[in-house]
Image 1 (cartoon, rainbow, N blue to C red):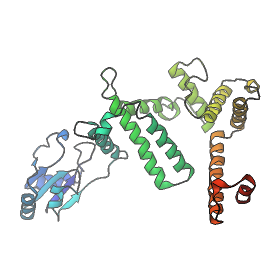
Image 2: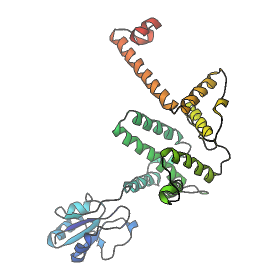
Image 3: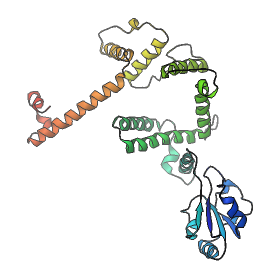
Image 4: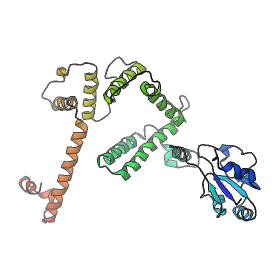
Length: 314
């Protein structure tokens, strides 16, 4: 047997089954696993890299570690590496650890000063940047922006863990989410119902939500801080499911009333007025940029053009 590097799971001191035979045959077993993993029976702390390298050349040595790129593992350059695939989601633990370090003493001063209130603007900004990535079908940006939104979740959960009166942490957040998903999908997890379509599930979801939260109105729980067009569409959608007559929509000539009616009718027709308006707005912005570029190419200052001249380029 030659020197072997055994990679433990990041989820805890869990070793691949293939490591058991080499552990039995090893002349020495060392570890540089985190102290939080606890002591591994029969394993001693890894010595200095040069001593470990020399011993690994002379006799069978096993190193238990998290990464093949760590100093101790790199010292055993010719060692066989035994590993196993991590479960999906294992990398989330590293993100939680990074957030914890940034927020802890000796971490980042800016991160340490943030509060739930101070982070609100970033949550909104990152959500809209994610929306842009989705609309642009930019896969690279989508991955990055999902990470930025995840950061906001981890950040708020880390701050919440420090609350002296009502603390909760990221595990509480995940546990609550899992319980909600299981509870609102009894047809999947309990086998007590049968839903044939996505529309059936959407209706059932709202029924279960009202029951859980004991809401008295169909529009309770609608986020009133969302963009007004999306808010109007959401309110109308909720009211329609509750049997509210659609002919009782706000009636008037004021701009707000007209906009509400347009959003409501679009939603009732199965459209997404918020997304539709954003698409038109983005096309308009692109047209303005193109017109400005054309004017400059013609030697004209866009800011100094009159309306008829503008229309030549628009």
